[in-house]
Amino acid sequence: MAEIYQALRRCLDEGQLVAAATVIVGPGLGKKLLIWPDGRTSGDLGSAQLNQNVVGYAADLLVAQESGRASFDVAGEMVEVFVDVYPPPPRLVIVGAVHIAIPLVTFAKTLGFRTIVVDARSAFATRERLPHVDELIVEWPSTALKALDLDEATYVVVLSHDEKLDTPALQVALQSPARYVGALGSRKTHAKRVQALKELGVSAEQLARIHTPIGLDLGGQVPEEIALAIMAEIVAVRHNVTSHQVAWLPLPGDGAPLPEEASQRSLGSAGISAHPTGPPVR
Image 1 (cartoon, rainbow, N blue to C red):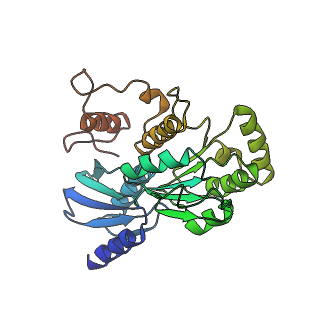
Image 2 (image 1 turned 180 degrees about the vertical axis):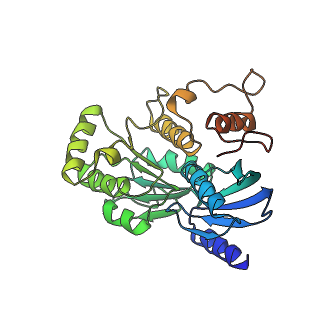
Image 3 (image 1 turned 90 degrees about the vertical axis):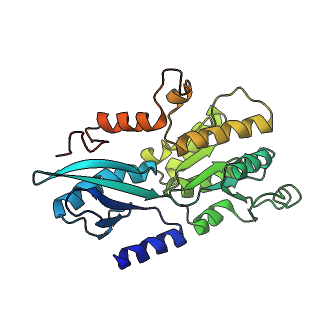
């Protein structure tokens, strides 16, 4: 058990995405299993079958970066497992020290994101323009993004309006596990960008990850409004809310389920019990 806690501490210290599964009801009470996004594990829940089932269940939770619990049938006995997901601290990486970047940094920091602005143009990337950003990097964006080791808690926003900077940066971001990749630009600009990225070897699946037009459609025109729309979309992605769901978000008391109830309904629709009394996974 000590080895599991030590491994978990290392993951937290290094900002690695990891899940810790614990048996909370049934045989093997208290046993733990650490699970990484690539399928690696450490520990044991007391049964090879249970380990396999929980790893499969945890895979979706790791993608969503959300914790959950479920019941599993193991040799005729019900076992309930809680999977606690530990996402790395969120980072917002902005390519292009343009006007929109200034309020975008403000909004992101308010929401607890570490903010990084990257731009090769030293005339734009200055502390006078961005005194509040956590890290300002004056370097070719594609080079800087490779060095930043983009992970599952990184959100990349490409704003420079310069395809020589934007396209190579997008290539790096799309080939990384970054949780969000958005790019400013018209549909015509995006079509040219897609063609350029294809020539650089970016796959169709990777290209589909680009959020463009960037941000939720709030009708904004000025930099602050556009920044708000971008940050709103990032928050939606962070919490696994689709654009369709964003269109109408009822408040508790309006006949809508509370967040916990909604989560339980989602589990039920997937055939997984959210309660000890629910049907076990087989």
